[in-house]
Image (tube, rainbow, N blue to C red; front, side):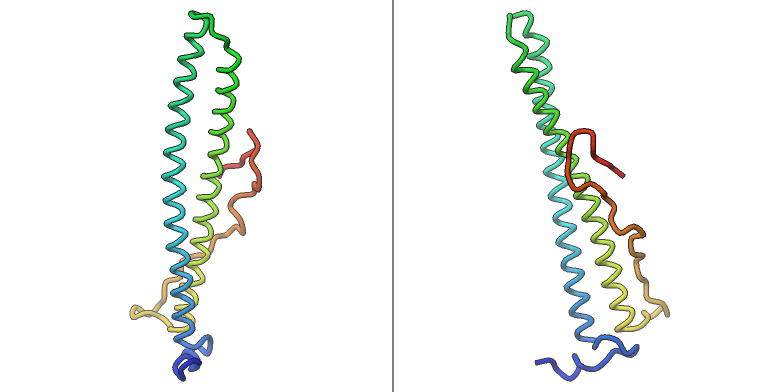
Length: 152
């Protein structure tokens, strides 16, 4: 059951103050969770990229040495193609990062608007509301094929 304060409308006549503050807190927690997710994706992407490039460099050495020892180049070429495909798939990290940042800006805008509308302007006379993203979606891709990724 809500307290009487939770049911008291804000000065502007919108959400009750306690409900607005609670909703704003939830939006900010979601925004912080997305920020942590973004850092995890960036770290994993960097680590994977480093390992893939290291493996690719070693495959190049093997390819260059193969004729000297009569080694079949076909398996090396197949491995190189697989590595190239894996590196292309890492573009997922870039798309995911863009979507997370976009969603964070939307959540922040909602939290700021709730605070402004429920609690009024700050002590300086104007509440700061971060602008919402202009575009509804920063990434138009919903699948990944080599050469089909749109990066912004």
